Length: 313
Image (cartoon, rainbow, N blue to C red; front, top):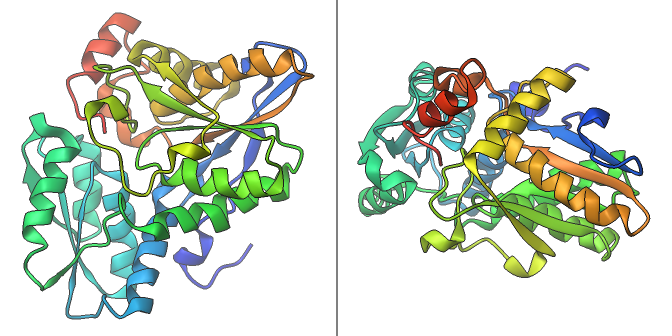
């Protein structure tokens, strides 16, 4: 396919069956590879939607600096979209972010303001909100902006229905809540019986890209009523099944992908008793930004301890 701009290539990501990872014969697992987006994650979808929403409302003008708290993927996506649209961009991120994410932001021309790593992305949000009092900034704020939800309602959700209208269940990690809310609404409109299930880390467990609502912060855009269930997952399970994705199916995905696969397997066991069918697993990014964690190259105990030393959400 030919595109006039890198932005036109966002979305339309492939849906691939992973038969070796299904625990039962009558349930087929499919993975939607969001790592195929230009900067390697599904956040390209919302970055474009957030900036276009700001432009349409008139709140974002060329004299503004786009400001956003991020652990990496959203910031990298916003930096890419901002650079192509002629905007300056400042990312607020924890100071223990992985080196790959910092270097990518710098490569796209972003300014980086670091927050205290021990406070995670909640600390970045607090710092960004303080900075946003300066009216030279425009902060789209992915956690509270409905453009996030709409990007997945119109894009991700519709693409899944175009490719697999007979879908029985959808599984994604719980982050900002935009993916689960947006995709969930679109799928439920198509067929209210489709199950929407979240992969959520156990309280105190660190699973890259995911957040536990038990930590005390619920993103404003997240609609918990869209969920048919949440299944808790541990860091070790996420690492084990991220490795399995690579070793059994050749798919090099980010670490939260393993959490989604493990949860999808639990959903498959239940679906099998109800006639079987197709489950779509949302894999939010590729594995390239996590190579420094050595999650794929160390023994499982070492990998788990290595990964816990760096930023997760």
